[in-house]
Amino acid sequence: MRRRTFLAHSAAALGGSALIGTVGTTSATATTQAGGGARTTETLLAGTEYASEVVTIDAPNDGPTAVVVGGMHGDEPSGYRAASDVASWEFDAGELVILPKANRPAIERGTRHNDNGDLNRKFPTGREAETKLARAIWQLVEQADPDVVLDLHSSQGVYRTHESSVGQAVFPTVVDPAPAYAQTAIDTANDTVVPWYMPYHRYERGNSLDGSSPLLGHKVAGDLDLPGYIVESTRFILDPSTAAQWTSLIAETLLARHGIPRRDGRVETTGGDKNR
Ligand SMILES: [Zn+2]
Image (spheres, rainbow, N blue to C red):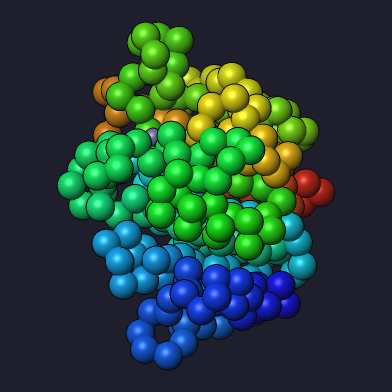
């Protein structure tokens, strides 16, 4: 199917210098999931300091394709933990291409930046991404030919509470249905996991992503005209594992709304009976 042709294309398109290397020696690992579907693990920029695992999940039923990115900033554990959660799930339909730890050098150091600065400022709309790693990530996105892109982050503070902080907010692209689905995910999180006694931690809608800034989420809107989201949970009076769980729930909700429901997930799917 589409993913398999993508694997063949990726090496050819690059004139022999493979963007996607393989884990192990000769081939990507593929395992069958319970109930069908396949999980494949590859390596982005294999053999470099940026080498990072890409997990592809091909669910049993046809559906849209999502790209899920975490760990663009190395000091945002809830983002890359949540993306790793998504990579461990099973899905009933659709395809996912998941890069849980996009910025391995920064994650290993626990810093926002790698040696080339802020990775999530290297994605200008209308121009090539600005670093080797950013170009590889963007190529991964383009080759996945997604219907939706999620970028999972965390923030020191809280949106509209702490100056220039973005925590506890979901930022949709301007492309429908992203703004409405963002609100659904926000409501789901606020109704189900954010405790009543933590009013500052209720999620809000962030500003819309439109290609006006050099962030991955903006480029998804500006260059691909796709629905996409930046999800930001805070580190302010919130432990990383809880923040990761909340981020995961938002990701699960967004994916389900886009027709990529998690198997036995917590989120009600359209027309489904998982109302709990
Ligand atoms: Zn971030």
